[in-house]
Each structure stands twice: as C-alpha cells, then as structure tokens.
Image (tube, rainbow, N blue to C red; front, side):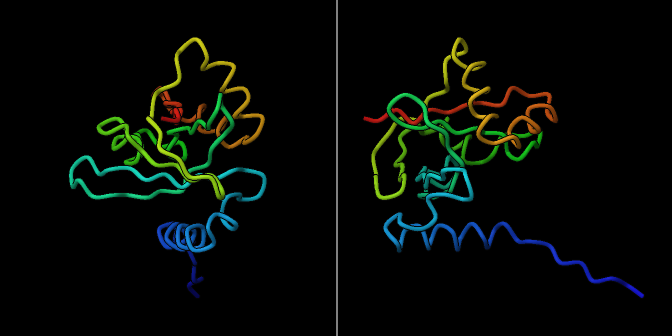
Length: 143
C-alpha cells in the first residue's frame, strides 16, 4: 500500500503571508513565532518588475539585517541577487515602512552579528554549517 505524502507548499504560503501582511497594514505577519519578518520590495534584475519577499530579519543599527542563507542551499536566493543588481529597496517592518539601500555588512562586523543571529534563530547556524559559500548578511540602511 502506497502512503500518500503531503508537502507544504512554501510558494503559496509566501503569497498568503505577503497578502495578510499588507492587507493588515503590518499588524499580522510581522512575526513568525519568535522571529521578526520584513516585507522587502526589490526590482527584478532580469524582468525589471517589482518583487516582494517576506524575509526573516534581525535588529542591526537603525534598521535590520537579513541572511541570504537560502535555507542552507549552495546558491544565493533570487532576492539577494536582485538586491545586488539594484540595491534600492522598500522595507516594511510591521507598520513601519521605509526606503533603504541594501548593503552587505562589513567583514569586521560579521562574526559578532552572526552570533546574535544564531542566538535568535538556531536554524541560521545550521545553514552556516551546511554550505561552503560565504552567506551574505544584508543591512537595509535607511535613506
């Protein structure tokens, strides 16, 4: 007898999450469990179309930082590549919405920041151990 497997579809979850986040004005969707989530608008590097992605984020300076861990995969996430091609983004943190520039965190700050991130989200530490690539940390510097 074959056992039916169900897989969680992250693509549809992400769409529903973005919709709930935006429709509620940031009252819902800004946290998943104990982790803050930002909605980030980027420009597609190939299409030139606006892309919105929910990303787990962590406090940093006057804004937040995100990890381009891609859940421990060896390739960078598409949103990261889009931000490197066009660093002008819009960030929504709960009800706060602001324009920012996506910038990689300076090397001299990475180690301490990674410790803070892993303290908040242990999965990020697991992703660090899984990959050979340097996982970028991206700061959304307010403009």
